[in-house]
Length: 281
Picture 1: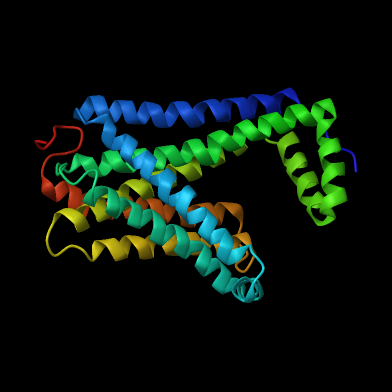
Picture 2: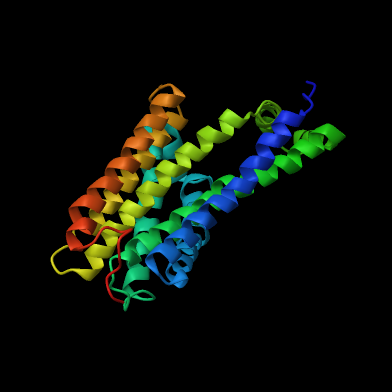
């Protein structure tokens, strides 16, 4: 099977996507800091907590449960709904627990309500950098390899070791060659919904930590996060067959509704509008 050469439009789309994936989250973080006079370290705590709990802790354990061959992973593979539930449960538990631990430890003395949004911007913004930015950079390197003929060499090497993975490589190469700016835009739309969700969930967990009688908001955040990723997992393995736009619509509904509920029912009741002034530190 011949590889399609990557054209200039695909290179432009990938380059633009990689640039915006770093510039936009940083721009949002800086704008929020200067508008609200917030401490940038709160945003950094959100980013660092996401890195620790979502990548260093969650991903290896999730791989151990799902990917390593043992009775549990074989059961999950043969029961797709259970597989999707586990896929959703891991980020739900780890990321929301990360928020809880951050607010209870590093941010325990920061009780102004803007702390919740600052943390959410750091958490969600860093996810954009990882999920989109690094992936687009990797795809750019693959695009250069495809045009130089080096990617075919890689495929040949993989075929000698794991021939069942070759089709996935050809599929990825074809996707890279045909990626467009609208495709990049769809990726950013999805991440925008995710950022809204992370800010909303951060507000929920913030109040679970800071106000007596509201700890129930922490398991609610876990359930919302798990449900969102559970549905995404079901769509990923075609248990539910929906158009891409329908899946994005569900994802968007979770993000928007979680943010709006947390913002209007909790954040706004605490005082001023977030762009009109800050509670004292």
